[in-house]
Length: 309
Ligand SMILES: CC(C)(COP(=O)(O)OP(=O)(O)OC[C@H]1O[C@@H](n2cnc3c(N)ncnc32)[C@H](O)[C@@H]1OP(=O)(O)O)[C@@H](O)C(=O)NCCC(=O)NCCS
Image (cartoon, rainbow, N blue to C red; front, side, top):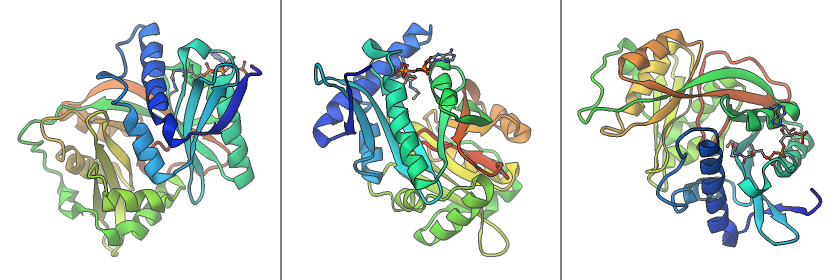
């Protein structure tokens, strides 16, 4: 399509981008025989602009029609120490299948190539439109996740895990150790994100860490408690048992709510524990990576907010 102009989102575009995210995902979902994705009107999806722009101002790309001035699509991205991450990508349904998604993705792939870093994201295994968009652009699915939701009882989950005694809320001094464990497990570092979650300036975040026996960490797990997006992650742990103890601690931050979390499909012990606590499957996602990467060496628990595979 020749009438696409790519530019950075401006503050005045936020309401239109929130509308776009709301309409695009709801339309796609209903057109594919599923319930709407978001409810409550497009004010709800404002949270994407709030979170991504707070962390990385100027890193939302929009596609504007040169004919109408209307926004055709948008995509958030951010650069970290060793990778670039792509956040929510949406095209207005009027423009589906006309090359808008490819144009947005192409711009961000070029930014990754210029930086000499891999580009990572988490894509739905049940959405072949986005899956194909990414794999055509050279992304490789590296790890599959079960998306699970779990209604946390008002009194919290009463489970007991032996390593839970080493779990505690994160403190500002944990940031370097969080980086050390995430690079070991997932091959990435995102210091800015860890600091933001731990400092929690907007009151949305919580982070638990699990201490190792050498003064470092065996893992960490963050979560967001926004009304639209109550999600556990991102986090990593060396073992499934440690990941389970972190997951339990974060779930218990949300008594009476139903947080979403993603567990690697091959983590049998963790998946069975989650079922035992009342979790149910609701989706499947894949970590897609374009560029060189190490294999995952432990348990990675990603999130869509802010997204990183
Ligand atoms: C997914 C989405 C962003 C794609 O954007 P789009 O502008 O419609 O996509 P494009 O027209 O640029 O390109 C899609 C590409 O995927 C290819 N494609 C689509 N379905 C395919 C399939 N089943 N097999 C192989 N390729 C396929 C198309 O051929 C095209 O590639 P090409 O241009 O090289 O031919 C858009 O459909 C959307 O916004 N969906 C709802 C929101 C969403 O799902 N977002 C992603 C998750 S957050």
